[in-house]
Image 1 (cartoon, rainbow, N blue to C red):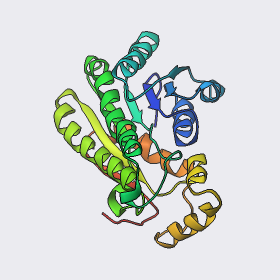
Image 2 (cartoon, helix red, strand yellow):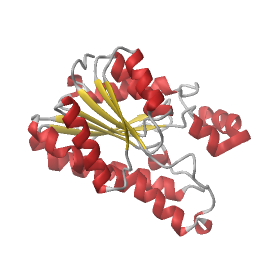
Image 3 (tube, rainbow, N blue to C red):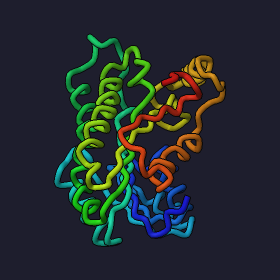
Image 4 (cartoon, one colour):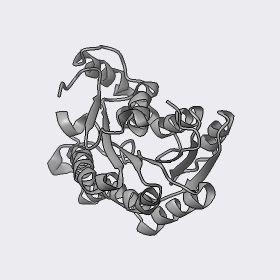
Length: 252
């Protein structure tokens, strides 16, 4: 897959999956705009080490003004926006508990970032994608949205909303040759997973694998290929879809 001179914005790119997406898009020739509330300086170094051009931005995906500033900075630097990867999400910092014990403030914060944030970013990049006569938006959901995560209703609901946003938006923007798809991974071995589960991580990962057809742990690298495919011209007539990357846990 060749992304030479394509401009990709990746949110939540300071570490973990977002940083890995940035690395791989850079490796395939893209100009990468790495965005996060945390510093993306390390991600920018990785992009440059791959021989690509990049831009690191501080972006709050819940803020309309911040996301429009993100899109403006990308357009000013590279004169286009071809791809958006909506990766930013609350996960590692969440409290997981029975649904009736969850705090209202944490429910609102989860929906604000994980669902509203995608809406904000999509609005921000739409003018540039229309001007460029097309584009690809890849939203990151989760197995939780399909399988259901006990003691994580706020996260499950937010990631189910991502799938709904994907389907509705795909209907709206198809006439502009903009494709919108979702990738829904199983539990991936990342820093955020360690933050959520702590010393229970290995037990949780083992239990997760036991339900997979292919009983191997999901690493960051295992998700990237699907994202690259959906961003590329190889999937030019694929839109509104949710692709599970879960080792064969849910068979749709």
